[in-house]
Image 1 (cartoon, rainbow, N blue to C red):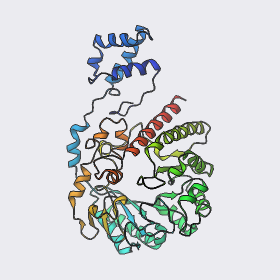
Image 2: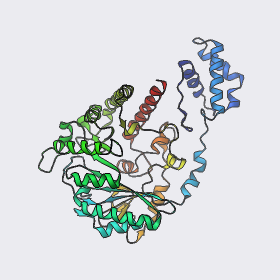
Image 3: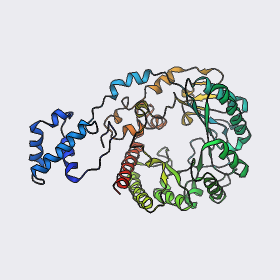
Image 4: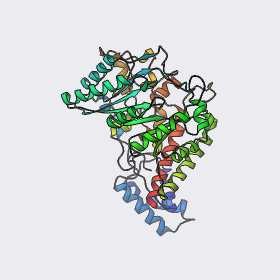
Length: 451
């Protein structure tokens, strides 16, 4: 992989070793430097015992041509424009509406404390939600497509307000030439035919929370009385996924120390008939018994490798499925600003509490030092937004030499803050997993292209 251009090349062993040898040099290679006689002579000295001079010369010519085409040894010029990117007028394009700070499950790893988010239980009123949509429209500039995620807790516990806000949003679309893309994230407990029909009519995406195998899910996602939720929700999720033609949804799980063999949970999703899935590593304090620790990483890496190989086999057999963390666009990818700065939390993306407070994202809700404003008055602490806007792969020392930096764009700022006290750092265990996921995604793409 050429890190800067994002170009991925499938090469033979000879070409791979030539590129590796050239990569040992501290200089930045250009077409001119590669054509210098000493470069070929150096390759002959280092690799001549294994390969013929003519083969080395041919491989170097191929590398030089790829460099000429801007697909190899591309110079990083992004840092030169980072100040311009930071100065861009940012428009808000997405809101995470905390429609319910309440939940009917008691998930043991819940960062929202069973839906309460470090505070009281509450349901968002229609008036607060309406002002949130008005705020989004007013701060969205010329952007037409706007995203709203109904989040919790459990959003279906405040279902009437969800429906009313969707109706209000559709009215406002016509008045302001906007289009709302609505999403709902649900644990499925209250899901029924009426709600399913509404979701299929109005929601661009739906996230279904399920952790995998019955014993894994029920250990971590029980009801408040301790009873498991798997048997109740799985048939509902299967029905919903089929009703959406296995598109525009994904089943989202969380793996913990209790199921480091999480590839089995993903394959269990596939056995249940799901085609769109994700399973995220839990993030917790090291004192939490379920938290992932650095010593767990070798096993986690094995699981990602195992999953990647199985996905290749299934794709070739016509039984493929999509795994969110392996879905990387290697043909185009995101725009430069996204590659540098990531998810847009605190700038393009904000979370709204039931009483209308604005936070950089759902993981900061309840932490008063990150309270940015409210839907009545708008952003009243713009410097917080400036700090998030300045957060990028060049403001984090750990990102500079990381081959995956333009795929994760510096990682989750909330995780960085929770582990290091600053958003200008990275969650180290998360970085290790992200690098492995990118590696696996590239491998899958290369293996299927070669096929």
